[in-house]
Amino acid sequence: MVYVLRDKWAIEAQEYEQEGREVISQIDSSLKYVKRLFPSSVIVCRVEKAGSIYILKMAKKGRHWGIEHLRREREALKIASEISGITHLIQDYEDLENYANPILKEFYKGTDLLRLGKKIRNTPIQRKLETTVHDLHRAGIADLDLHPRNIVLSPHKKDARIIEIGDCKFRREEEYSKFDQWVKKDLSTLENFILE
Image (cartoon, rainbow, N blue to C red; front, side, top):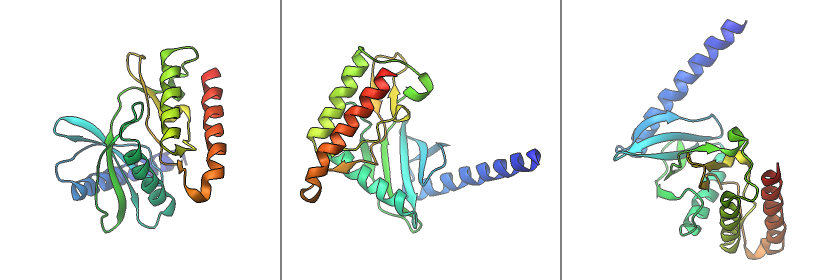
C-alpha cells in the first residue's frame, strides 16, 4: 500500500510541475519556471525574469477562496507599495481562460520563522516587524494572518519580511468598527509568537 501511495504522489507531483510550467508561459513569456511551491487553493511558483527570482501567484477559476485571496493581496500590495518590511507587487496580469488574478511579487531569500524556531524578542527584527505591522494598520490594512511561516528572516538574520498578506481586511466605512478588533488581533498574534 505504501508503494502505491508513493507512486500516486510522484505522478501528482509531475502533473503539478507540468501544469505550473504551461500556465507561466501563457501569463508572461519572459518568465522562466523555477519551481512550483506548496499545493494550495492558490498556485505559487518561483520564477525567473531577467536574471532575478520572483514569486508568481494565481488561482484556478472556480476556486473562490483563492480568487478572493489574490484580489485582496493585489489590493493590499498596491496600497502598501511604500511600506518596507513586506514583499512588494512587481506586476499584475490579466486573467487567463482557467486562471484568475495572477500577480508577480518580490522573492525574499531566507528562512521562515516557523522553520527557524528563532526567538526574536528584544531584537532589531522584532522592532522591524512591529513597525511594518503598524505601518500596514495606518494604511488601513489589518487581520494580517501573522504566522511564523509568513515571516522570512534574511540569511544573515538581520532583516525580515512579511511575505503573505492576502488574508487581510481593509478599513472601510461598513467595517470601521471591526478594524480596531483586527488591529488588536494582529498585535496580540505578533506578541505571542515573539514571546514563544
